Each structure stands twice: as C-alpha cells, then as structure tokens.
Length: 169
Image (tube, rainbow, N blue to C red; front, side, top):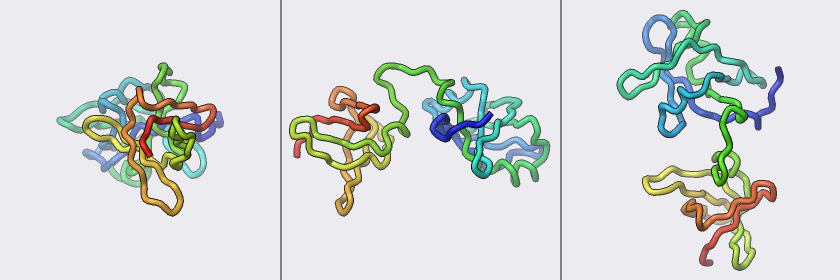
C-alpha cells in the first residue's frame, strides 16, 4: 500500500542498539512516553517511502523504552538498518478529539491578531515548557515571536490555515 507523508505522525526515533540480539533504545515523543505502547502499527522511512516495522514488543527498562523488531536478530543489523530511524504511526490510528491538534498540523499556519486582523507571521515550530506549550512565530526579516499556546486565547482554523489570537501589539 502506498501512503502520503501527511498520513503519518512522527512518534519517536530509534537510538543505539541494546544487547546482542538486535533490540534498540526507543526515544518516544508521546506524552507520557509510555503512550507509544498503545499503538500496534509502526513505520519508518526508507528512501522516499514508508515501510512497516514488524515489532515483537516494546518494554521498559528503567527510564528507557526498548524496542524489539521481529526481523532484526543481531547487533550489526540493528546498527546498520534501524539505528537513528524516525518512527511513525498512521494518523488514522489516533482518535480525533475536539480542540486537540497535532503539533505538525500547526506548523506553517498564519498567526493573526483577532482585534486588528494583523498577521504576526507563520508558526515555525512549537516548544514544550513546564507550564504550557509555546508557538514560535517567524516573519521574514524579524526576530521570532514566542506566544504561549493557551487554548482559551487561541482560535485555530486549520481549514483556513490560520490561528487567531488575543494579543497586544
């Protein structure tokens, strides 16, 4: 089956091999990190296409997650084929919730001040902080603007490719 890039969500990456039988450290981007174990179908990118990753299991060892891949039976294979690969799941495997967004859905959206309809720029990235996430806004030739991502102060219109905010100029 052929998939498009926008059908996938990045959920982690594979770190260094652990042991001699081909298991690897798994760096989960989910919150909490154990949430990655809820999914059953994983993929990685090989050249320009997505390839299914046939997992035996994911376990926890101390603070680390360890991934066991069925067809990976040696340290050498883990090192040469899988180490450093980004791990994806299908977007359709995640139940959609009202007022919940994937970070990558927000990248590139135009940020507009509600009161003046003035554009501040486009979302370049998001940062996770202790209290709330922060939108990093880029406008050509200007310094980045950091805006706290607080749901009652932000209106997201994904179909219009815009984020409307209450913000003082």
